[in-house]
Image 1 (cartoon, one colour):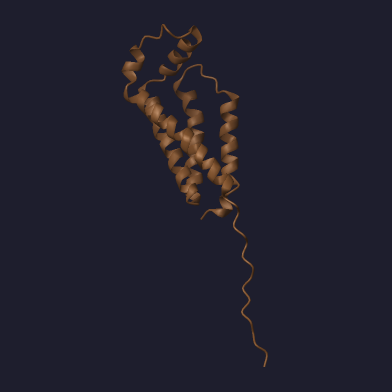
Image 2 (tube, helix red, strand yellow):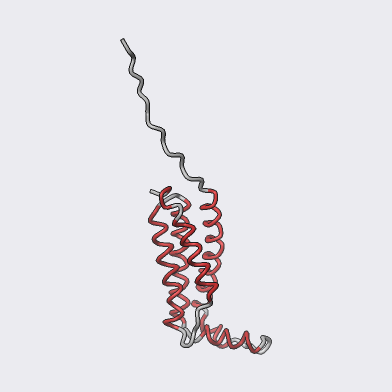
Length: 146
């Protein structure tokens, strides 16, 4: 009698998640600090609005005036979107696919938000490039996520 051996098909090796972890750490730093900064500016908006900017150069003063022209809601909404982005990265760290969708949605809205709130704002190309690069980088790990 021939013995039958139960041979399991070879499982596909899981994709190395080292680069995913690297992207997540960068997102933890970037989105975490941005969330904190935008929340503080939003929470203390009136103080920032009345702050003396004379020690700063003319270019810096103009940039701050442009950003503050967006209003308190812009900063608080941005803080919320950065928190959502951070939460998405935490979920991706845990290999949860929904994290990619939350992160991507938050990042795309963060690109659009200043265009809606700041008159005359021009999006720097580098900002778009970094956002697209991170979303693409994360998307390469979608098969590893559940």
